[in-house]
Amino acid sequence: MNKKKIFVVTSILICSFISLSSCKKAGKSPASISPEPVVSGSSLIIYPSPGNLSTVEHLTSSDDYTVEVKKAGETEYKPLFVYKTDNYWVNNYFGATNGPKKSQLSASFTSFSFKDTAVDVKITYKSTVNSVTIRPLNFGINPVKNGNVVTFTITDPRKLSIEVNNRLNPLFLFAEAPDVPNTKATYYYGPGVHNIGLSKIVNSNESVYIAAGAVVEGSFVLPYNSKNISIKGRGILAMGEWPHTSTELSFLGTRNAIKSNGTSNLVMEGLIIANPCGWTIPLYNSDNLTNNNQLRNLKIVAWTGNSDGIWVNGTGHVIDDCFIFNNDDVFMSHGATNCKISNIVAWGGPWGRLYMVSNQASTSNITFENINLIGKDGGPELILVDGDAGTNLNVNDITFRNLRVESHPYSSSYNTNKFIRFISGYKSINNWLFENVTIDDKNPDEGDFYGTANSPINGVKFKNFMLGGSKVMSLSDAKMDKNNFANDITFQ
Image (cartoon, rainbow, N blue to C red; front, side, top):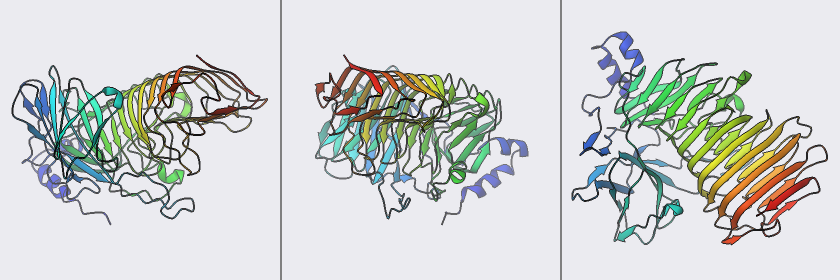
């Protein structure tokens, strides 16, 4: 049963001192909570505490980690507020009884911002630290451990997973560049807890700002054909209050964290989205109106099935510098053109893939660049193109460049967690490039390229493809298979 929201009373009291229109448009904070971050010098910003989280479902103060930071060269560390969310989802779908789900028991996370300085980070774990791994591994961060304390230094904004002793209770550290709070936003939510309910409408030319230290419970809907909307901040949009109770489209379509359809010139930046209970950010594209949207520095922490990260539908989108820990597709296309997805850290689960192309519209000219898949907890393939037979659509000119897969262990759950699977019912699948791809582990089956006479696959190039520590120069070395309707699959 959902908890009663004590904060509603606080909001009513505040509204008695301000105009009705101001109360409607802005989220108000408890007076005891500082509305602005604490600034150390001019370049290290410590975000405020959200205050009492007792009314927030599946979001608490972490009892696993304490985190402190300081500017390099200084002596005094400053504490960060560390959140924790538990793996509360139960998979009872499709005939399963407590079926496959993410193996992690919980995830803690915290954030701060800085510029023009190195930052020393000190993490204290609840018990002895026997081992510690900081991912993405290619960031080259080498921690020092002493008892139950881990220390390291960062010089640039990073999105990190700190894993102590095992991968069951990770800590996510979001070290980001400072922003300028938009206190004049149409809907401003300062530090503290706010419950806005499901499907709060944000219209064209309106703005939302969720400040650092704010936890906003609910979801947003951007109406059909909306334009020029801004949703920014350093706070949290949380949906743990609403359980995942169905896989039906009618249910999932009303449980999105931020849903839009036909939206253009949307700017979304900086938020942490915790515990979505349906698709997280679906960009629907009715009538081909969805275009030129920018999604940057977003962080998603999700447990449930159907927790797709971002739908890349429409044209001209930029998705950059995001962290996605979820249990369904990280990215999904139902038809997209001329989009770039870059500088991503992702950790997938047994329900989904890194990228899936669905057969609703043609997809072309999509570039994935600098992608770190730091984990994939079983389940289906990492990349899927699967079209119904006779689909008169194309999936052409897709590039993956600088893709690093740290872990995608073999799984027996309804697929083998292989790297790629092309099952072509499309008119064509042409000109795919995989350049500078490194997969640290190696499964016995890593891919299939199966076309038909009416749906051929033509032109898949692997350039500098590393698998299990060795460069791959053939399909057999890659542990991949093809049929006679898949042509021009090459390795360089």
